[in-house]
Length: 139
Image (cartoon, rainbow, N blue to C red; front, side, top):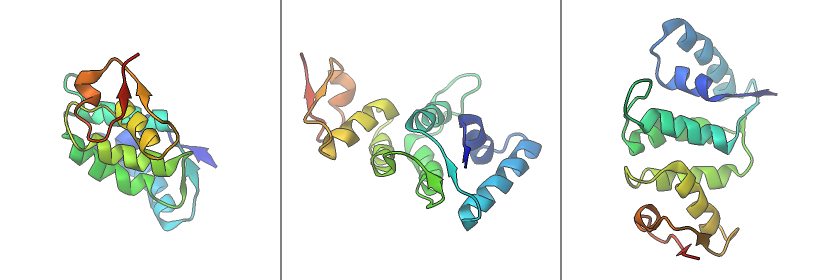
C-alpha cells in the first residue's frame, strides 16, 4: 500500500501541470475502481485544505465548501485508508461551514462530537465560537 502525500492530492484536484495531473489521475482512477489501496493521514488532509483555501502565492483561494466538495469524494473511497476516516469526513463538513474555520479546529470539534473528548481546551474563542456545538473550555 502506498501513501498519498499532499502534492498528489493537489496535482489531481488542481490540474495546473498537465503531465503531473495525468500521472495522479492514473493513481486515483485505480483507487476509485478499487484496483489499488492507498493511505493518507489527517495531517495531509489539513495541508490540502490549507493550500486550497489560503490566499497568496502558491495557494488557490478556494471557498471552504468547494475544498470539501473536491476532497470528500476521494477521502470516502473504500480503497483510501485513513485512521479515523469518519472523524476526518465530519471535520471536512465542519470546515465547510465557514471561511474562518480551519481544518485543525474542525478536527478537534469532530473528535469532541464523536465522544472521543469531553471538551476542547482552547483560548481560541473567536474561531471555535463560530462552530456550532463546539465545546470550548478556556483554562
